[in-house]
Image (cartoon, rainbow, N blue to C red; front, side, top):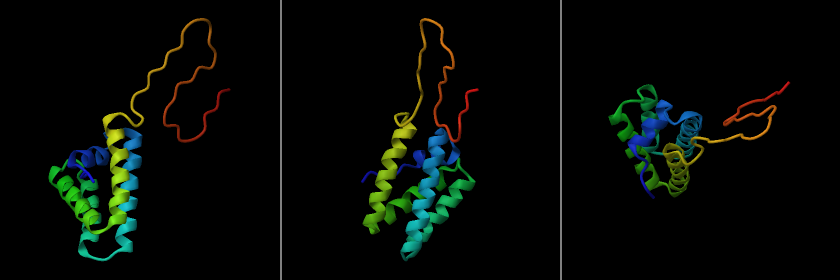
Length: 129
């Protein structure tokens, strides 16, 4: 398993990766909290504390490193958490690098078009009247 980097954590916590990054940050919160409540030990509680601390100060490199270390420690001690974290990390890396829903390029040419809509990340209804 590759470690979750402090840079990736800071980008997601700060919202730099857009809506997809915010969604991933929320999923990490859920993963940390769900796994923390299921297990025992200070290492499980430490990751949740570090996550909250980075959430409050998204530009703090030290906090991001401490969260990355806490996640790595928990992953070494809990195979189920390690598996879930690895899947999360892979998706987060794709989004952060632009491969998981980055920029769009669309082109309309020739003739007359009506009701052309380009969109991405729609959260709700679209009505064309």
